[in-house]
Length: 282
Image (cartoon, rainbow, N blue to C red; front, top):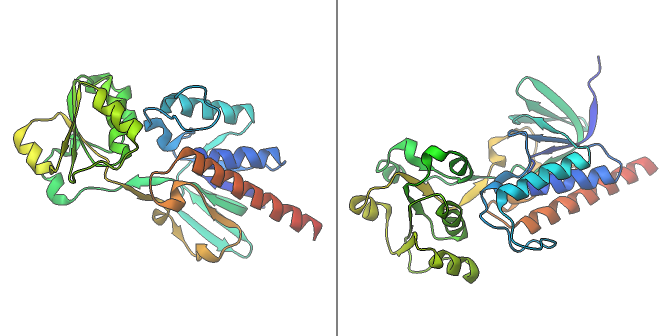
């Protein structure tokens, strides 16, 4: 039996993948949206408060925004296929997307796979029990057994401050350590962190400095992120493929803004639709 050939496969159901899928559906295409968690949102789940996205009357928690994204997909009759892409091959004009136990064939491919956290050095990891190390806050917020503890956050960017705010309502004490003398964050976020009585920022401190001085129940690392795309094996050069697109954080290789990701998804959807219209005319 001949395999079904899909017009578009989108890998990743974060803001970029969701916006691309919905826009394609509006143009009359039937995109196949894949995500290993079988739900929309991606890293948005970890956001304490999304405040700069147009259309929001008031700041919105990341978990709630993720739920709205899932509802948005349902209202547009788009289902998320569970799966993790391990390999993509090109054969003739088609792309073969290999999942665990199945293969999808498609004409256009969108990678909206997001990012993975950068890991600390082995020397730093030796200072902490591995079961106390975390890179995202969403799982902790859902586990009441891990609440009301003293936690350490390592990192000097917006992610570390955002994580601290997310945890501040459920944790007893939060300490953020920054190697340098300043924090790379917008002033509104910084002021909100400084207003919380159970959050303390320590500058010019290393992990070893504070671990020797204090005991912590868990340690969160927010020291940067990098694209997951390198984990997927490809038998082609992605940079020269006209029908393969990389969007959102997967393209920037860092923790971006939801507005940028959504714009990326919409733009790629437009390009795919234009290609399909052109091919139809030919």
